[in-house]
Image 1 (cartoon, rainbow, N blue to C red):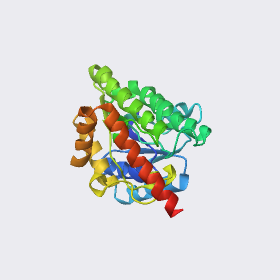
Image 2 (image 1 turned 180 degrees about the vertical axis):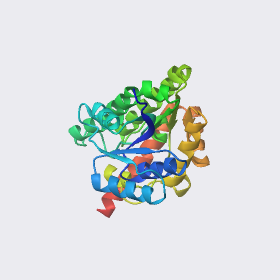
Image 3 (image 1 turned 90 degrees about the vertical axis):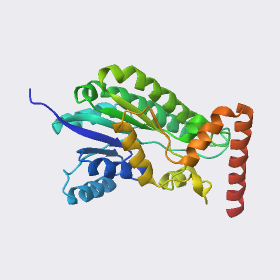
Length: 268
């Protein structure tokens, strides 16, 4: 049997942090498989990477919210003679607003993508990652450490990503698989517009560029770190969330989200 060549699979690779992660992994010599729904963007990124002299990434068009997406990705990789050494679960979206008033179907779709699809892809290729002595990078959020009134389902979905990935870090260590959860703070990308955020995401000292987040995630994964929180200010937020009483954290997050909704209402 001919050995399958190792690739790094990156989901949500058509914009934002996903694009930055693709460039970061490619810069370090990884052959890529780019996964998203928008073929034109994936092809453009693949062309860009190929122009640097790196192998042209595989382009896999897939809707991760559809049943069987992980199987289809696996089939596409095998057809190309490849298997994952690294899997980067970056695909996801958020919604800002009161949970009882936001579209329920859309919130359930968010759960499906942020949690179910991430879980499926995290587990689907464990044997390949073990064979290749590779790893798994799941993109969470600083929101995963906080209660999130005003964005309740999104914060809860990222709490799941954090808990699940930290557990896998312990479970898969014996098989030689690195597992890291990357928890950035606010990043100015299309994500904010998709979530319904208008204006400033957060105080500037909390905001990180997609490129800095991607570089931190890559370094952390290669070093076998369990958790990566880019930026000193976001590390301070994490520390505060751990030491302050939960009721105070709840009040602070709720106040921030309430002010954001009020500002957006005035701008509308």
